Image (tube, rainbow, N blue to C red; front, side):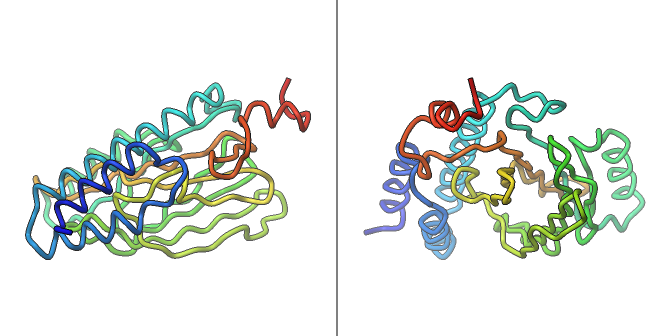
Length: 231
């Protein structure tokens, strides 16, 4: 099968069954084939479909609760903007402008290799630190480190290093903590033109005790009623 034919098949599969299958390996494979053939327009199509799926999944997560960032009842989405290291005066001016407009902890700006701390879960039980070590601007790939600390006792919940691409989907590529909190990181947008290169990430805090569709045999709301966590 041609690379473009495989792309169309993967896009069709993903748009219809993205909640139930881990699709990142398929997307990565097709993206590499298209890159080897220099098919940039087809790569943009693949990324566009991935973006649509991520938006759909986030929208469905918001509907699971109130989405109110102060009460922890629903999904909350924080935005992390990562820039290349500003070297020239004009780049530094752009970076300073971004920092001046950030709204911590929900909108945060940082440079490559700069730790982003004080990312706290809606219920206040977890504190995250995210570091973007490397950025492949051409292929939209980031190498990250994520450290999660429990605010109760200060114990380490998770410490992982991984590669984030356009093809990490919240419902399948996420981290579940023992107390029912769950997070995911998704690539939102990439800006490689202009004075300063930057990438925006979405940090998704799932509704508490949320089960993804492929983890549950019945409706999530009905399950929570059965175990006495929702009336």
